[in-house]
Amino acid sequence: MSSSIHIHKRHNVSLLLYHLVCSTKYRRLVLSPKVDRILKKTCLDIQDRYEIHFLEIGTDKNHVHFLIQSVPTYSPTKIARTIKSITAREIFLKAPGVKRALWGGSFWGSGFYVNTVGRHGNEKIIAAYVKNQGLEDEYDVLHKDSQLNLF
Image (cartoon, rainbow, N blue to C red):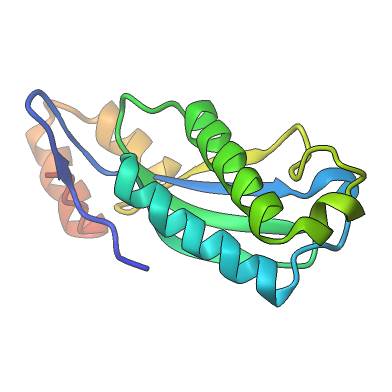
């Protein structure tokens, strides 16, 4: 996989990181080594077609953790929906036994977990940075203490 970078677009620069967790339908134990390979290959294909970049993918037997970077025009819901629909289709196509194990239904459960991931600081550091805007002495102290460099 790759590492995060600032993505430069015509009217914005962003570095948006998400931790996405998706579980299989009925929490069935269907993420075999073969399914894991299909999933990761499919994610690389998604990365080539969409502005969704996979920094890490970790599979367990019944759920998958993704560390993803994307752009502001893609909501976390759109990212999850894109990943879940394309990977399910490819897994069912290339590993038909999985579809039988899930009774011909969906590959993924209906929900997901998503959280933002900070590269330059946590909530406390960013809150202090925002609160102290315009206070030159506080600005210098904050930057020396946290080594925060947003741009």
